[in-house]
Length: 375
Image (cartoon, rainbow, N blue to C red; front, side, top):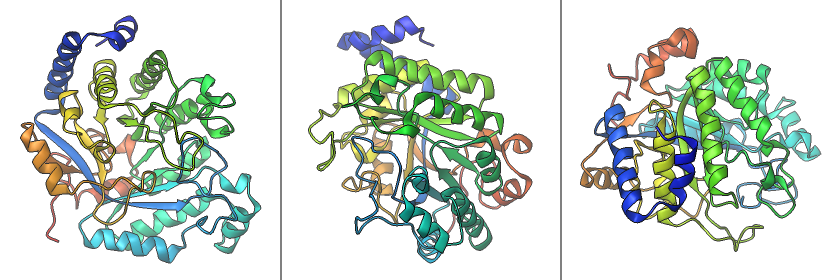
């Protein structure tokens, strides 16, 4: 594992040195994860695209008054979920803007019409419906959460997630990516990671690179994630995601990280994080994504045959067969996993409620990966 000083030095490592580090990262991945890469077959449910934050790179969020601003109705949610079930999906990724009801009266009124006072209340109702009406597994990405919210969500979700993005407070300053984003204050996001660990939540987090952070801030962000995992053993996967500039945003002309920067950062993550943490990079944000395998990743994340990537709608998911072929060309198999990683299934009394643990028995293999079903 890298020390902090070694991790900082990786920024300026020569091509020869980077190649040696990449080989170490790939060897470490192979030792802990074998010659198999995984993905989750999912549907993406954007429960609301309203949010009280104004990130400089985001096109997902729509403000009240925009014709596209919305909260999905229960019927709309379940139509997507049941189509996903029909096509063999097993994960429902609920993603939503953070706490729009605290900023916008229109969001509060829309929630009131649905019989709720908060987005978390509504999210819990829809997770329950997924569990009651389908065989699928909810994974919730609801941003920063309180102790009470996490405790209420645990019985209706097998895992949760929230991108840390970066722990730099500098990025909150005027003109930076997280200016006017109360939920991107690093201490608030780190507290959510800690609360999830305390409650035994298998958790997904990660960093977003290329938003104005320094290499040192990337290193310290990954080290902060690792410190949480060493205490609670609950970080099931870390995503390294590359910023993509989008028209109409404050960062529309901001330079994007190139493939070399992604590879260098993935090598950093694999050599800095505990080997038990899955390392993931999205294949739809880089056409030459096969290079990620040589940098030490072991997972491609969620891939949907039904829904687009609502965060990056201009970037289509790769077809699963094409992903399998690209993975095979690098010497690896591709297998489907569930929204909860196999190692957490060995400790259901801590990481799952009893009803959820029982539910998993019908859709998992003996090794904890997804049981294949005829479609």
